[in-house]
Structure formats: C-alpha cells, structure tokens
Image 1 (cartoon, rainbow, N blue to C red):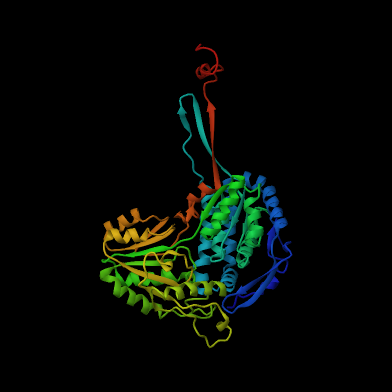
Image 2: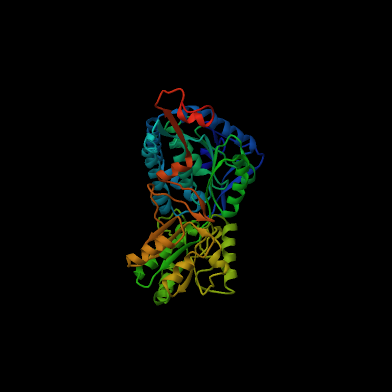
Amino acid sequence: MDHRFDVTERFAEGAQFIAGSLRSGSSGRSQDVVDPATGETVYSYELAGTEDVDAAVEAAERAFAEWGGATPGERSDTLHRFAAALAEDAADLAFAESLNCGKPIKLSNEFDVPGSVDNAAFFAGAARHLEGKAAGEYSADHTSVIRREPIGVVGSIAPWNYPLQMAAWKVLPAIAAGNTIVLKPAEITPLTSLLFAQAAQRAGLPDGVLNIVSGAGRDAGERLVGHRSVAMTSFTGSTAVGKRVAEIATGTVKRLHLELGGKAPFVVFDDADLEAAVHGAVAGALINTGQDCTAATRAYVQRPLYDAFVSGVADLMATVRLGDPFDPSTDLGPLISHAQRDRVAGFVDRARGYATVVTGGEVPAFDDSRLAKGAYYRPTLIAGAAQDSEIVQAEIFGPVLVVLPFDSDDEGIALANDTPYGLAASAWSRDVYRTGRATREINAGCVWVNDHIPIISEMPHGGAKASGFGKDMSAYSFEEYTQVKHVMYDNTAVARKDWHRTIFGDRP
C-alpha cells in the first residue's frame, strides 16, 4: 500500500506549530525542503523569525503552570496515548522521514519509526518513577526530603540526520518530567517534527506543552538559546556549533545539555570473529549513509587480521545497493544534500594524496534520470592513512570508513582514544578480559562489545570530551530535565535551638 501524502497540502498553514496550531513564519524568508534522492523541492515554507520564537516560548510558559503541576500518573497517561498515536501514524512518519532525508524506507520503517514509538512508550512509564534519595533524619533533629521538580521551559535544537528520533529524544524526557518545550528542528528537515507534534496534540497533550519553530540557527536558534524565559537548552549537532550554543547559553546562566560530534573507533583484536567484525563494520559505517555521530568511522585492526578485514569489508561494501529510497531493496540512500556529498567527496579526494581508496570514492551513475540528480556517494573504504591525518581525525559524516593496523593491545586502545571525540566505540574479541579492558579504558559514552550501533530506550546516550555532556534516553535523562530540591523539616518544636548560640547569646 502506498502511504504517500501531499506534503504541501498537509502543511498548508505553515511549518510553525505554536500553542497547538500550525502557522506561517514571520521572518520574511522562505525555505525549500528538498528530496535529496532527486534534488526536487517537495515543500516550501516561511522560516520562523524571532517573533515566532517569542510566541512559542510564551505559549510554553503559559502551559507550564498546568503541565508542571500535573501528577506523574496524568503525564504518563498522556504519553501512553502519544505512543499509540505515533504507532497509528507510522506509515506517514516513515514516508516523511525518507522523503525529507533520503533514508531507505526499510531504515525508516524498521529503525527510526519503531524506535521513536518505543521511546514514547518508555517515557510513559518512566514519568511515574522520578527517583530521589530516601527521606530520613540525616540530622538528628530534622527530616530531609528530596523533591525532583521540572525546570520550566526547555529550548531544544535538533539536527537533520535523525529528525524524528531527535524530536523524540528531546521532547519525551522533557515533558515526562513536567517541563514544556520549544523544539527547533533543522530548517531543512522539519516534516516529521511537525507530524510528531500533531500526534501529541491528538493524544491530548495540552496546547503549548510542545511547540515547534522551524527556522535558521542564526535567527530562531540563537533567539531560543538566549531567551531569558528558557530555563534549559538541549542541543545535538556539531561540536563547532555546540561551542556557540554554550557561549550564548552562559549569558543567561541556563542549564545546558550538549550531544556533539563523534569519530567512533571500531577496535578489532586478533582473536575476533572476523566475519562478524566485517559485517559489523559495514553496517556500523553505512547506517544512515554514514550520517550518524556514532557511526563506525575508524577501524583499528590487529595486524594478523588486518589484510583479511580490509578485503572482506571492500567485498561486502561492493554488494551494497544504492537506489530509490522507496524501493524496499535499496540499502543506501543519498546524503542529505549535494553540499554534504561534496564535503564528503572533498575529504576522500584529499586523502588520495596520502592514503589508498580501496573501494568507492565516487558518485554512482544511474540510468534513472531523477536519481542521477540525487546526492549519492558510494560506500568508501580507505587504508594506509596516518593516525594524525585529516581522514582519521575529522568528522566526515558520510559513508566512509578508514582502517588502520595496530600491534599490541596497548597501542589499539591508545589509538582509539587519540581524537578529540568520545561519543561511542566498539571492541571486537572473544576474550572477556580483553573486551573488559577496552570498555574500561576507551573514553566514550558508549562502548559496544562485538556489535556497533544498537540503541535502546532504557539505556543512556551521550558522550565525553568534545562530544559533549549529558544524556538522552533512559531514566538518566531526567538528570538533565529536573532540578533537585532539598526540603528540611524541624522535628523538635524547640524555639531556642542549641546552634543559635553560634550566632547570638550563650548556651542555655
């Protein structure tokens, strides 16, 4: 069954969702939403301006009194309905995600959409389990109680690589904890964020609890981050932009959560299952056309397996099918834009001067004239690069894997840690002591063992070093979206307390 819909008709009123209604932006500038598989414009809208951001924040402020005061059970009930509404909209969400981002429909159907539905279901339950230290007499004369309270209005900025999942990761823990939120999706990928907000409204989320402003970073984004009524900012994107977000946020001393770039190492020890490592490397490197901050980008392979690994990955990459994202047999879609494809190609072309392109490294030829206009790039494997080279150190964000050999376990772990980033990594070995050491010593927010990429709602996602700080998903995300308050009750009913003498008078 074809679940496609007319995007222009669906969002005819505009791409801003404020206080429960779609509306047009006020910036006076338009933005095209482009299908990266064909280069065709599928929707045009007016970008949000500063007035739209102010209106969205005001709507969120008004809604906070009611939503922040709702019981955990009431919020949970709404989120359960929200999860059901997202499941009902699964086909539309998958279509919009693939149309807007070029994702193969099988990835949208089997990863992005069900992952987001599951995230909503998880936070529906987690809303009823905000934890704190047990009440007790930590002072002999007092009872102490911990309250975990919502912060207020959250201003979140999401990237273009996973628009639906990033909307879920930003919105769900925030509202489950009782906050209200203004989300700014990337201006080139607003479609699924808008569908997400409409599903929330249908589920009974009060108007103003979730607002969407589709605008440019320098206008809408900076206004949102710097807004004095926004109590917290959560940002996912590049490290360079994250530094700018942090700079603006400090101006109003607001809480900050940053999930930034990555350059994930994929460490293969000489006793690893070679077939598993080869398949894991190709899947981990090519997910979402490599546009994933946790994607496997640097494979370090112990020398006895190195040649076989390079050969195996090159052979398997050659079987990957590029094509129409809506063809169920397509494995790899385009990059998000021609600009991003050219950026990736630039990294590879420069690497030819100091390394070997084993396979890929080119734009594919298509008989289909529409696909020939898309932003496609072949899966690429590079060998022979130095550890300090650009292709090893910089975040490329495309279907490119670079492989380097190592000799000792000490060297492999040291090389894995030798970048500014620390978001994700994986270690491949049959030896539990080897993998145990790797999980302890590799400095990353997530270390997989004999796999690479799987994420689950119950476990946290976030990085170290230049990859940022704070956690998405899991109950740990409530540490970002709540503030802890200590309440202390006197139990003595004594007017003149012994400690008062340290301020005035003598001991009675």
